[in-house]
Length: 254
Image (cartoon, rainbow, N blue to C red; front, side, top):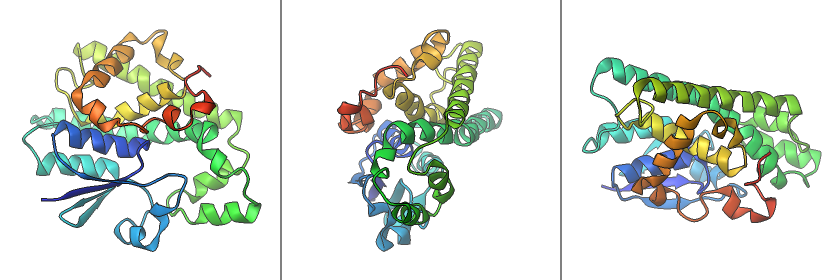
């Protein structure tokens, strides 16, 4: 049995798969691609993942793509450590969280991430070079075109922050209502794994004020996540942009 993960060290989607692998105490071959490069856009990589994004999991050579699909796949194939509830209604509730996290915060986190960090890879390009770079990315051409070389508007960034605020408010309320300590109550699940890298990223970029002032359940939940052994395994050196770009002083509140 061989598990290979093609991923970026700091990618939130890659991190949720690494968290799942680590929680299940699985060994995997870690193929680290660099987001500033184009390893994920080569013909060889596009053959296993035509979307040109990370992560991609190879299980005995068979590709599994999309991070949420991957973590559900891992939970089905390696059930010794269960991360999905047995009760059908609870399972449906967990999957609602997964879809919500994909719909709202996953996309929202990209806006401040690119605005603060990743746009630096494109600012010095010509218009034509940027157009070519955007069109190479099958799933994100529209996102890159909207960003341009000058970044997003204040309104776009504020909308993204509002979406993150909605997310942490819902998390806070869910944990408060169930008594926690996790989103699903006392059951640690794929929902926690799915959203943890997004909240960690926002904290890493200095946006922790979105929850620390008045949503203590989220602050305490994040601390519990970071205390899990799997977290330190998944968050190896270089997994946070503040480590990769210390000159950007990301940790200062925006």
